[in-house]
Image (cartoon, rainbow, N blue to C red; front, side, top):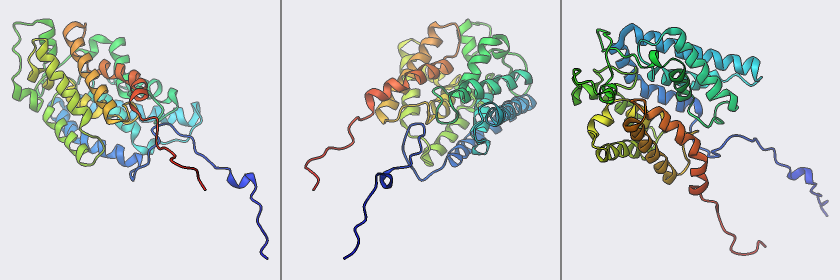
Length: 323
């Protein structure tokens, strides 16, 4: 007779790796996702360099280098974590931050923004996947509060003449400054932040992300649609409002961040509608001409609450006794 094996409790112990939510598995890896987003941002980057020349190169380089260096230093010596700068997330954070900055931003300020984005927006929470706010927007918010003049000084494309952005023209009621037409707003031939001006190039990148299934349509469509509807209700030009400023950049590349946005489709729609409403409220009644940055940060803070009421609590039901 075969000897019966006695199962010990140790045989049933599971070795679990505890990681940040969402606990979903897919056939893609973090570096691949980050690289896809970088590819999607490439048209807008090329457009930024074309329109704003050397100023764009300096700002992008300063933001990316400082972001990568800060993550390396924090991981290697400050938090004693495994260095993961090869996952492209720090590069992406730096590039997104640069896209939110004017082309005249000083190099030192761009570098400070990159350091703040990684340290305060990412590493203090535990690193990639555990942050509750979009790191690039955290860096931009800190720069805007610290040096508001530098962060709101715009120049015209190509010739680099100081000029008000389209949203600033409306906000300040500048009667002697003509508003740009829809076509200039669409292609990006207007003063503004590096990566926010060209809706066309950002739309091309967004379509690529949709094709690669990195994002879904829910947040971009709901965000842009809400801005259009709210603008009409506030007696503002809906087409102008969605083409001017950072609506396309925020809708396709900021609000869709996997870590800081809701998990469910219903939650994503609520999240995006909230972003659109807050954006329009800030534009119409706030002190700043643009509201995309703060709207996304506010909704980032609300994301856990949205998940609480939209994520299904029950995954299955036992109908009978196991035999």
